[in-house]
Structure formats: C-alpha cells, structure tokens
Length: 207
Image (spheres, rainbow, N blue to C red):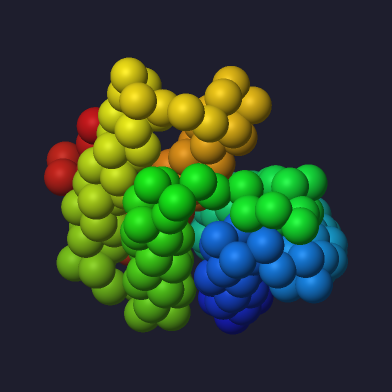
C-alpha cells in the first residue's frame, strides 16, 4: 500500500510540473496529457482503497494495523485531490488556448508557485518512502513559501494598475488557490505520516 502511495505522489508531481508548464506556455498537448493523467491517478486511488477496505473486512485488523489502513485511506484521498488540482490548472490552460492564461507580470509568481508545489510534492514522496518524521516536519515550513507567493499574487491582482480585467483576475485567483490547496493537502499527508510513526500529533505541525 505504501508503494502505491509513493507512486501516486510521483504521478502528482509530474502532473504539477506539466500543468504549470502548460499554463505558462499555452501548451495544449501538455495540458491534455495532465487531464488524461488525472484519470490514472483516480483509478490508482480507487484500486488502493478497494484493497485497503478488503483487507479491513477480511482480516479485521486492530491497533497499529488498523491505524495504518485508515491512514492510508485518508492519504490516498489527499493525493487524489492534489491530482484534481493539477487537472484544474491544466483545464485553465486549455480554456485560454491559444493565448497564455497568465499575464506577463504574474508569470514569475506562478512559476514560483509551481516550483514550490513540485518541491513540496517531491519531499512528500520521500516522507512516504522513508517515514522520516523530521522530513515530515519540514513540509509545513516549506508551505510557508507557498503562502508568501499566494499573498504576492493577490497584491498584484489588487494593485491599482491591474489592467487585465475581471475574467483574468478570476482565473488567477482560482489558479493561486489551486496551488495553495495542493500544498495544504501535502501538509495534511505529512501530519498523517508523523502520527502514523509516533502515535502523536506534532505541535510543530499544528496551525
């Protein structure tokens, strides 16, 4: 089960990188790849959840084994949602094709958010693989960078010299939310790994 979660994280990381590139370069083919990839992420989650529920029904696990299975269900749901958010970013790229959805003055911020999300997802994959609690604690600190970029995005959107109209502002507001929520889901998974290993909720991970 853990191997499947790691594979899901890898798939989400690839989707995030491709979705960001498609968004910034108006690459329709790449956007379509991300949208198709989301179906594979969904299928992987459904298969994992079915196996987990079957194990719970057949073996009736207790204590730590039950905690592992329940945590697996929750983490797979978070990863699936992260895939959905990549899908939403790619759909925005497709919707605005052949134009780029991102105005020039926001390109660096959006690229930064994409880079931050990809780095967080890659670290999350290592957390899932190693169950390193110290690494898990780093994920929320990494999320601080995403929050700062999100605030920067809104400063540009709300500036008096914004000249791209309401439609583009709405697009960018939603895009910013997709990146920010993706990072939040990664933090949620990191918290679950910490709890899985220690049986405790880490104070450093609490808001």
